[in-house]
Length: 339
Image (tube, rainbow, N blue to C red; front, side, top):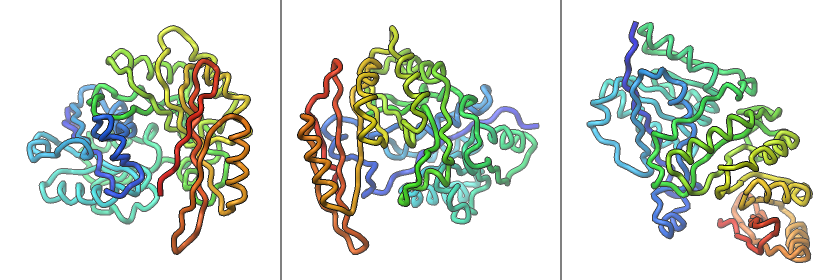
């Protein structure tokens, strides 16, 4: 049985034109990249404690031959805008004779595109990484491990390995309270990956994650990266009320899809919980609907903006309202979603 192992985790490059880059914002704040790789550091926490782990984010630092020389195995994976580089990493591993594990939403959606990888971890990792670990220790060098869609118990999700991050490289660090979404938006694949029943972590889990970041000296923005944070409103309200305690008095950036009519009831709770900003993306093919929303925001003393994005496929009005929360009041702040 193989017990000790050196794991090189590589977060692939996003395409240069990707929405996720926010390059101008990073330049203004001297950050190298907007968000840290929460998925990989969660997987890292699922590995045996005696396995050595090294994390390289290709969006912020160089991946060198010395990293491959050090590693016994490489783990990588990500989203669709990272596909090109993920495939490049797999090719590099095969050339160097290093076994490679691929996971994440893109390989889960299109596993056939990643057939060159030695191992595929499809779906949520919490309950199937043990199967991979067992296979690796047994000496297996090929395998596919698949989780049942939308059934993973997120209360078993470990505290992410925030200690692997170079925290000063990022605009914000993500935490996750829930997975899944009850809605059926035609443009979104969340329900195909994580199901329509929102599953939430315990309050203690999320507070432990926030306190872990605090203990590491992090004082920046924390982004709740949930698919739909208000999918389970009762659980969210309970968390907000619980989080209003002692050491959790830091800047939180709440970024989620929310129904506008729900906001008036949630805003006071958000303020008490020390949340500082809510993003409310809204899109429609109807210019009248967008204008109506904008007028409603003005009447409520909230400034907003709208614009048209035209393409060969469609013309869509898109609107991103940023609610800045301070001392229970709504500050006047809005941002346009760039084409």
